[in-house]
Image (cartoon, rainbow, N blue to C red; front, top):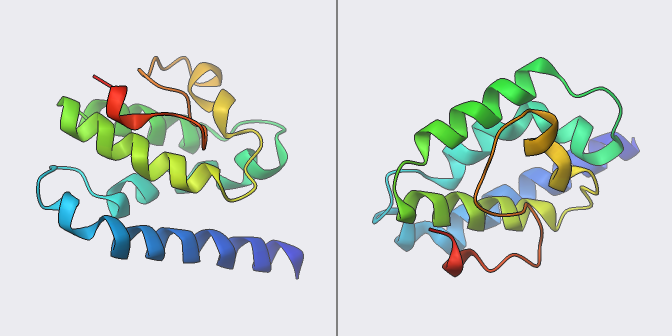
Amino acid sequence: MARTTATLAILAVIVALLLVVGPREAEAAISCGQVASYVSPCIAYAQKGGAIPPRCCSGVRGLNGAAKTTQDRQQACTCLKSLARGNLPYATGIPSKCSVSVPYSISPNTDCTKVR
């Protein structure tokens, strides 16, 4: 029951993000829906830690490769920042656990406007 509630809360954040960030998405080639799709295999790890799923790392690598421009990276950062607000204490460590270098921290405190 708690897991279902947490999953629904995360999905609600994603939907809210899509509504709030919608106009900006038209400018970026990557959308919050795409970001969510890439990182969805990471949600269980981001919530509870443990072994990181290989599909999570594949998704992180895919997202990193898809975010080619500064605008894309800022958009991905903004989407991930909002997701990180949803009780995902292990989210920050995902890129390093997957050996992927991203130009920002996955944290609600990240200033995505400074991402290049």
